[in-house]
Length: 476
Image (cartoon, rainbow, N blue to C red):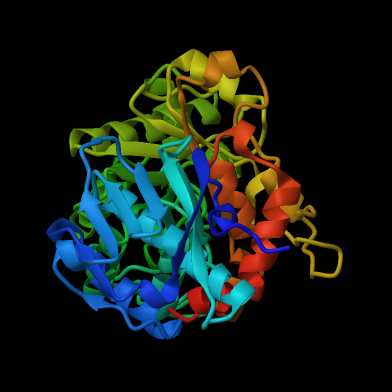
């Protein structure tokens, strides 16, 4: 049975009213974009060229597809009407406009598949759409295995198509330091498993590309642990310069000042990034326990453990980021540590942690590993690492940040973030880890629970895959 063209959209829109009208694709001859949405013109041209649709720009009164500036100021909201006379969409800003074009892309691909190019048509519909969460994130680890700028751009384009609006970029770790900077000239892109580094021009180019896609970048420098690559070149900031390890010396006042210089340079490289991630997870205390400077700092500050000293260090770093006009972000640890209320906490380890974070008044992002870590295998046939769980498409789809105590955490939950760590994922495997679970994740991040159905998601995903949409997106 033929599928209604509006019932293929992923993620599923907030409201769809089906009508009996039809619009043949042979009638799609001209398109018009509001001048504020001109950045979308190449996307439309590529779409029509790929599907062999002869459609060219025109004045609004001559157009069969019209994308107008709407009056709704809410970010990411979009509307579309398909009637016998054409297709009209509107949005109040660029993000919603792009989502309207992406929805049209899916409908056109599916229509050509089901009816053939000569007979393809769009069914009548009135669509209204808005996101469930303002933070719909995707994290990519470029520190363990490096990805070149072309790969980063392809990832960003795929994310934008599926309504993902935050790109959390993990740029530093034990195995690599991936941004070139004046503060750390000795770090040249050498890595444990792969080599490569982004120049300032690379970062500016990618930031501009993301901005045009409606994606904001959250760059991350991970401290005080996960720092072996830096400390190998700058051992004076470790507790034991002869055996630097992975942790910064928390008692050395120069550590904090050097990190402030690094973060200042990072913020200068990403002037449009409102959030700066400073890590804060999985640091070992062994070096600190044996370090005279760390012990002295703990006593001077009337602290009682190395975890309290670590918390004090990260609070100082958070305040510095906030003083620069950005929001600091930190990985949650379930250790009861308390951060300033303007610090965003990323929940990754325990589904119970949101309650503790809300009690402290912090905003949070939900990334619990066994629900949203895309490096985990999707099925038993994929390769595993000892720390991994199976994470099926269904498992991603059923993820809900409000799984426990929704009434207590809803005012503090910004949204969700899927994470792709790359200890075991080389550049050529990145897309195979993103697809096909990105279909499920997009609906987890965007759609209201009452609109979701896993069986229907599978139907839509399979139809869009068969239409060639996935290959089209991978090739952008």
